[in-house]
Image 1 (tube, rainbow, N blue to C red):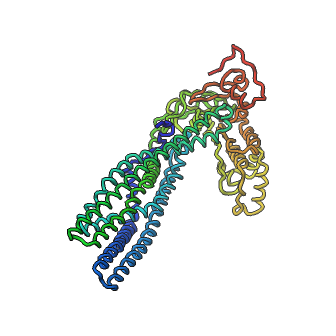
Image 2: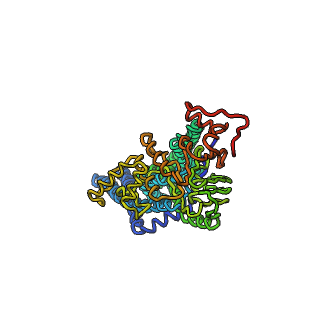
Image 3: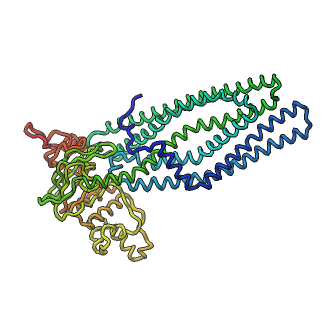
Length: 602
């Protein structure tokens, strides 16, 4: 079976089986009384469940011995009462279990979400964020489905099997021993299923996450992929990961079908053995026909519970993998925080330099701990008051470098230096954040003491006149009870640029700040960003080359390294990825002709 290495590697840790059992045990201990009550009700329902087959066997003996109508009617009433009682108690047990499972799941969901929020950026910010997304969505859903639908069925099946086996043994040990003939089929089939299914279903989840990530990368980075003529590569990556996911799902169906064959064979052999043994014992006058009937009904009663228990292993395996992935996230948070603090103490420090450079990066290397991807030995200098644009395909390392400079990740080696008095760089990403409250509330997040005039000036500077009018409306009415109306993505990002303008940083990092802005608003947001860049040291990660063209220097990234650098004109005059990408993205724009003497500057 072929596989995509990128899709089979677990990006975030998966907890061991022992750790999952410990986590579930801890949750159960929080609800000891309810857990005991649920177990007692399921046991009672299973005990009532054997009343009906016992009464049916008595009815056979009563008919065979020509007993009176009253005797037979009594056993019929007993059979009906047993069935009704079992159903009522089972409904009660299932209802109590549902409440217990939902409370436990709520605790688990809260723990997983809280731990995910405490994870350091480097743990998930390596371009494979779909792994975490699939855990807090798909895995939670898998556990919820198992807890709400599968757990009641499996608990009922487990107690029914235990009570039925005890009853069959008490009825006649030889008949019970005959039924054991089915056990090897169940055991062998279940063993083979468990050995293979855990691997298969874990791979299904991992490959589904990898497929989702490939789709996200292709959709979110469409402009960059188009600029660098990488669309076919991205589509091929989606296709390979989708096919890999489908192949593993098909393998999961094959594993389950093999289990079905083992179970059916066991049922056939076990029932035949009981009937044959019963025939021999009855021929020797050791037992009655009614006893054989009861034994056959008790064994037949095991068909559904055994099938549910074993077939439910499919869902249990999925839920177990989901639990292992969720517990892996929960356990990762404290360890990752400690590792981050240790790495921060040992990592090269960000220091200011005497030179006039606004940003200076010296031989910086950084690797994400989960995938090993990152940047290698990058050197960069951005003069104060100028803009450096980083371009390249998704995963090339440009955003990773920006986050290292912003202080999100400590470099593995090398150093980052900022000009004296520059302060912490202001980082503006492509993610859209519209906070609750008025426009003034949104702006004062970065400058709590900003006056109304300061905010108006910031809004007008970035071309957000609509926000000035909205602020005036807020002041005319009740600002505390009149939050800003829902905004589209363009206006949300304009507010974000206005916040950055109000913060007035010396260094600003713009990480594809217009990537999630629609075409209708893109020009307005780009104009606002242009105003923000004026007079500041700026690092611009561009998903469209037209954005980078106005920068004083452009650095082309590939595989975590700077492969080209220069001005827009210099790069267009040089054969290389930038020139090729520019011609693909703007085919109507003539480019300067290269000469043999013109070479790229590494």
